[in-house]
Length: 410
Ligand code: GLA
Image 1: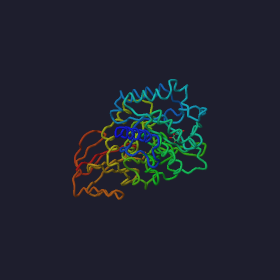
Image 2: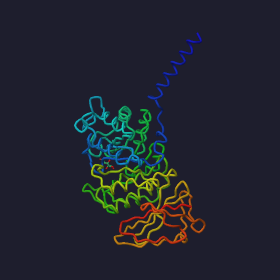
Image 3: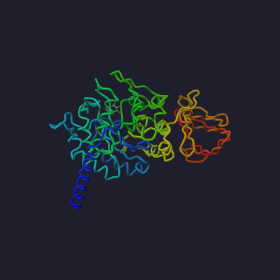
Image 4: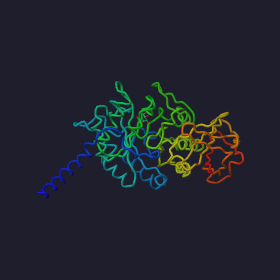
C-alpha cells in the first residue's frame, strides 16, 4: 500500500509540475532577463517591412562572423511586417509565407543554432503601425504562439489603440507572456506618451522614451501625417528627469541606433557614445551586408560597450554645456567615471576642462567625483590609450559633431 501511495503521490506531483508551466499565475515580468541593456539588431530602421528569411540568415551569419556577437550583440529582432494581413481561421497570426518560405520556426531555429536569440514585433492595438493584425483581444493566444515558436524578445508597439490605456494593455500582455511560460524579454514601445517609466518596471524589461529616431544629428523630421521623428541628440535630451527610473532589468530605451546609416562616421561615433553613456539598449539598425569597417569598429568598441554594459546600470547625465560644447558623465560600478565631451555646434571648439574646479555630483544616485580629493588616471576610449591624470586640465580640439570619451580611474 505504501508503494502504491508514493507512486500515486509521485504521479500527482508530476501532474502539478507539468501544469505549473501552462498555468503560471499572472503578475510580474520574467525577472532578470536584461540585467544589462539588451544588444542586438532590429530590422526597422533600414528595411521597414521589406524583410525576409535570406536577410535574417545573412544578418545572423554576419553578426557572428564579424565579431558583433563576440562584442555582445545577440538579439535578432524582426520588426513590423513579418505577418500576413489576416489571422488564420483559428485566429492565429501567420508569418508571411512569401517572405519566410520555410516558416518562422525554421528561421528561429537557425538563429538559435548560431548561438543568438530571436525577437518579434506586434502592437497592443487592433493593427500594427504598418497595418498588420494587432494583438488587442488576442493577448493570451499570441503569447502562446510566441512561446511555441521559441522567441526570446517581444517588442510591443502602440498604434491603433483607441479606447485602451497603456498601463492596462501592457500589463495584460506581460501577464499573457508569463502565463505562456517561456521567458521572453518584454520591450514596451509606446514612445513615452504615457510615462511608462512610472509603471513599466514590474511588467517590462525596457521601454521606449521617445518617438522614432531619424538618421540625423540634431534634427526634427516632420512627417506629413503630423508626427515627428528625431535626430539622436534630440532624443538624448528629450526627457531630462527620468534617469532615476532606468536600471538593471528596466531600461529607458532611446530607440534603435542609426549608426552606419545616413550620418557620417564622426556623427555615428557621437551617436554610439551617447547611447553607451545613457545605458540605452543597443540595437543596431543598419544593413550588416553593406557595413563599412569604420561602422563595425564603432559598433564593436569594447571600451564603449563596457560603459554601456556596466553592471551598476546608471544612466549618464548632462553635467555642463556651453556654446554647444556638452559634457556628459556616468558613474560606473568599480568607482570609475566616464566623461564625454560632445561638440553639438557647427564649428570646431576647444575643450579645456579643469578637473580641480569641477566636483561632479550625481544627485539622483548619490555618487560624487571630487578631483581635489582623488586623482584619476585617464583613458581615452576612442584612441584606446592612457593620456595622463586629472591633476592637469584636459585640453583638446574637438571638431563639429565629434566626441571624446574618457574613462577616469581612481
Ligand atoms: C513605430 C515604432 C517603430 C517601428 C514602427 C513599425 O513607429 O516606434 O520603432 O516599430 O512602428 O511600424
